[in-house]
Every structure is written in C-alpha cells, then in structure tokens.
Image 1 (cartoon, rainbow, N blue to C red):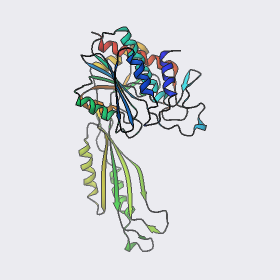
Image 2: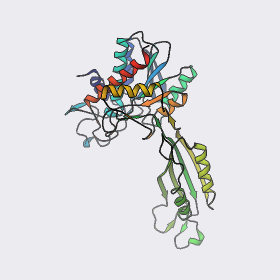
Image 3: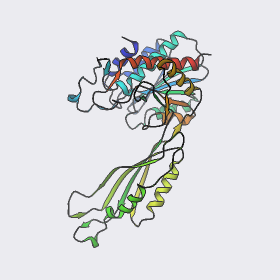
Image 4: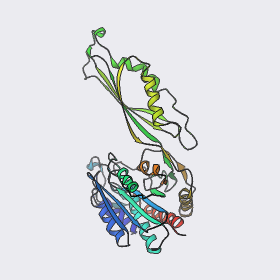
Length: 376
C-alpha cells in the first residue's frame, strides 16, 4: 500500500465537516516537522489554518489545499461509511477522497520525499492548509494571505490541489478562474388584493421587462483565456403563497461569472443603468466572492506541463473553467498559480471516490514539479 494512499485514508477517517479540521492539520504538521519543517498554526475564529515551511532563502513554492469537507448527505445512501476510508475495486471511497484529502496527501508525500532526497534544496517549500474552503471562506486562506503579507512573505509559485482533472488524471489544469460577483435585489411594490389591482403595485409585473432585458444581454465576448461573462438568476421569491394577494416585494439573487474583459465596477454600473430605466423602487446589494485571475505562462505552467507529459504521457489542457477556489486569494499577490488534482466527477456527491492509482501518480507529478523549480 502506497504512502499516499495510507495518508489519504488517515485524513478521510478524521471527520472534518467545514469548518472543522478534525485533527488533520496536526497530523500533517507532526509528519513534516520530523523532517525539519517549521509549522505556524493560525486559528482565526472557528477556523484552523496551517502554514508550514522548509528552507530559508530563495524562491518560495507553496502547495495549497483544504482539510474541510462538505456534509455527507443521507448516510444511508452511501455504500460505505463516508468517514471510514475503504478501497473497493481499485477505488478509494470516503468523503473528501477527491475534494481534497487525496490531493493533500499527494502534496505531503511529495514534500516529504523531496526533502528526504534534497534536504539542502534551493528555495523554500511550503504548505498552506485551511479548514474554511467549503464554507464562507472568511477565516481561511484569505486571512493566511493577510498574515503572510504583513510578514513580507511572498509566494512565487503555488499549486492548489483542487480536483481539476476531467476524464483522466492531469488531462486538465486550471491556470485561472473567472470572477464571481453576487447581487441581492429587492424590488418594492405595494401589497393588495388581486381583485383590486388599481390599489396595489405588483413588483412581479414591474420586474418582467427588466428581467427580460438583463437576461438577454451579452456582457462581453470573453478572450483567448476566458469564456464570455455569464449572468444567472439563482433565486426569485415573491408573495406569501396566497392566490388572492398581490405581493409587496420581489427578491432576486443573481450571479455574474466574469472574465478579465469586464470589471466588477463595470458590471455594477451596467446593472444600475438598466434598473434606472424602469419606474420601480428597489434596493440592491453587492457581494464580491472573488476577482478573476490568470497565469498564462511562466516557469510553473511549463514545469507542470512537462511533469504531466513525463508521468502521464499526455498533453494537458490549460483551462479557466469551473467555479471559484482559494486560488482567488493567492493569485492577486502576484503568484504564478495553477490548480492540479484528481478527477472531479464524484466531488460533493454520495459515494465520493478516487482512483487509488491516481493518488500515487499525482504525488509523483507534484514531486517532479518541485525538482524542476527548486533544484539548481
């Protein structure tokens, strides 16, 4: 049984539903400290974070990941205990197997083997681990980056272990992510009886033309690295469930996934311009989940593509698709950043699982990247 598989199983067996860490970071820290790593445990509110390094000078390479997992859903629908890792027909089952305790195990083992082989390596190797990625992402990587900035610690290269692969291991790496901007819109009307509409003001009717316009707009055409910006309504609510009452308000939640062709400020201004064309009262609040980021080229992308070619024998696809990740807090500091992990087909699902063979192979890819970047 491989070291990577063993560690993945140990991590899965520690119940760590967000924001709980379940002792995962202590396990990682104790393993790495035996090899001379220096650990800093950073707890912000109810979130545990680990920043652990080996080496003192030179460029800084960091692995980043999270020990927290999403809830299991109905446990009775699982074929195995979600917090008791089990191998069946070459697949490792358990909550977090793919997202992303397998990735964390692969990076820890890669770091261990690298330091054992090259204890006086060039540069600094680090791991940034949080238990707040699946939650609100307030007290995790975001605050660790604040801590690093205050201490003048700059990450030069970062590999985030999110499950990026599609059909086979390493067929896709993420070199960026779209920005995510959320809007909470409250359109106000006047409640009344459906039989007396002249004495009421129906916000659903008032909003219909606005909704038709905003959902039909082309916001931009994207670019070579990003698809076009998209607008999606995620929730619409009005009324009290009574068939004879005109509602007094309509509440709308929407989201932009936007490219580098458009800014947060431009999207907000355009929405305001459209809203102000219509004669209804409204209140609009904005929440930015993350800015777009992109690592188009550089030593990290080259090293990653080379490692995948050597280990897997394939040319990987560089993508900016998918949702958000904690990379959105790291990349804006000027870090070259990519995401590379296992196949993402089962993440957040019942019977989450990962190929056993992929765990060891991923760790070898990570090790190969380290050798290219931190050996002179």
